[in-house]
Image 1 (tube, helix red, strand yellow):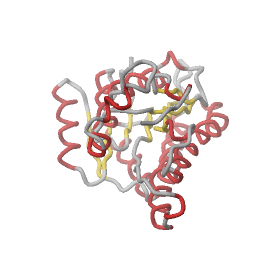
Image 2: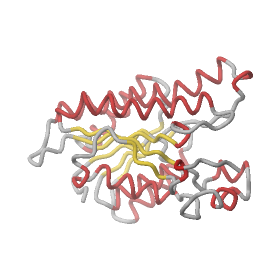
Image 3: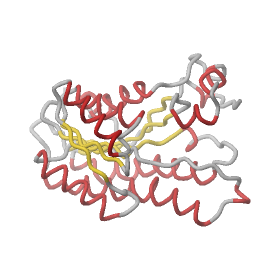
Image 4: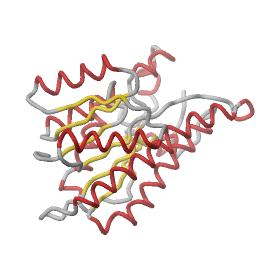
Length: 257
């Protein structure tokens, strides 16, 4: 499905990002596994991809810095010759009551979640535009990892939620500007998902949230990866500026534990 394509996945050293990278590689893409300070984890992702016959490269980059995003794209092109897919998955989740939120917390979240995704997409799009469309009209795919917190309010997530809401709208803005180049831009509205962070806060996280989700279970990293495969595939050529919700229907009512 993606043979000959080249992808970058940021935040790809663990869980959702790793599942995304491995799914893209299994579909035929060469993948840059971008991470920040998690060389051992990233190497494990690369090793799994290579063991399955795929091509992958790990790159350590602080994507809160604009130049790091540009260098990341340059390294992908140097290694694999082009860039077709950019997945802005890297992000931080920090909780803070509104009245206690500091400028430092605000800046940390906005720098990575919003600024990093914005300038990463910009660097990727410049490369895609320079390459041009292929014979099928495929000019590239950009996907942002957003969240249900960008749609529904959750206590103590004012800054995190606004960054994820910003990514939803950024996908709409860029869909308009980049669509004429054959580049589609979408977001994934990721809901309650089983991962290390959530389980560290609540060991019974999956059980507590499953009871509140219409499908009766929390998401798994593979669920996000499979949705990503659709958005970057030729089958999604007319899906542009959309946020695909991966919440089992939770945002229809949005109860919290």
